[in-house]
Length: 128
Ligand SMILES: [Mg+2]
Image (cartoon, rainbow, N blue to C red; front, top):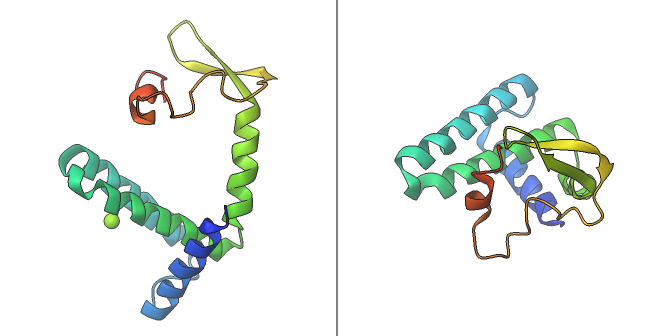
């Protein structure tokens, strides 16, 4: 998954070249949040812009990782492995709730995205 490291370095090089923020972590979190809001607005009102806005979110997140010394490839890989071991059960209100036990495959609930329905369609009912 070394692609994130490449994106991280390229996004950082662009920040430096353009004179964008490279030191104020709190500002970068705020700007990242703003980009996520832009993506939400694109989803609601301008779906043709959604990909561009989600790309902005990723670019800001990798910038934050670079700014704070996080190797996002390693962090995402570790988190995906951790998430795969988590187990969820559907609670009485229909929302998935994390349980103490670990999943054998991590795919007991939530799916793999290969069933034909998009992850978005599946997650609409998952209480996310
Ligand atoms: Mg944007």
